[in-house]
Each structure stands twice: as C-alpha cells, then as structure tokens.
Image 1 (cartoon, rainbow, N blue to C red):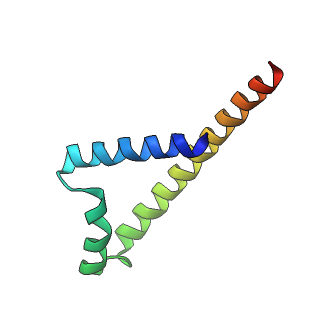
Image 2: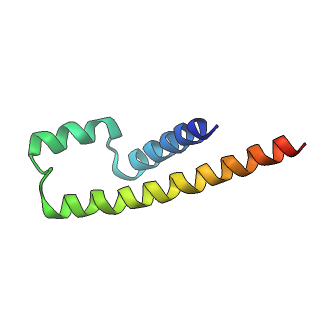
Image 3: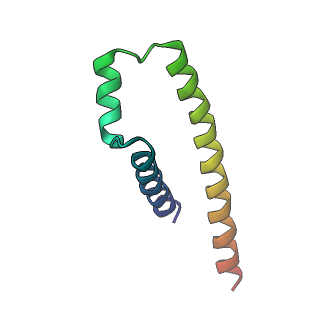
Length: 75
C-alpha cells in the first residue's frame, strides 16, 4: 500500500514541478551531471534538506499504512 502512495505522490510532485518550472523532472538529473554541479555546496545542502523531508514523509506514510492494517486486522 505504501508503494502505491509513494507513486501517487511522485506523480503529483512531478506535475507540480513541471507546472512551476516548465521543466520535466526526468531532464533535471542529466542537466545536473552535464553542468557538473553535483559537488556544489548549495546543491549538496539542498539535497540533504530534501532527503530529510523525504525520510520524514516516508516515515509518516509508513505509520499511516501500519495504522490502516491494524484497523483491518481488528475488523
């Protein structure tokens, strides 16, 4: 169940990213490599910040899924 939620959220995030920037998400990584900014301090800080947010989101969704499964088992 959590995998389905992750896929939906990724699709939503990709659409929102495109609507805001006009750039497809799949074009970002090749551009980062082409421009050689993987070690840029600003980029590294941004990746770390979003990694923490992503982990917190996944933990929250995992907990929600566990709660739903417990309710289903109780029925």
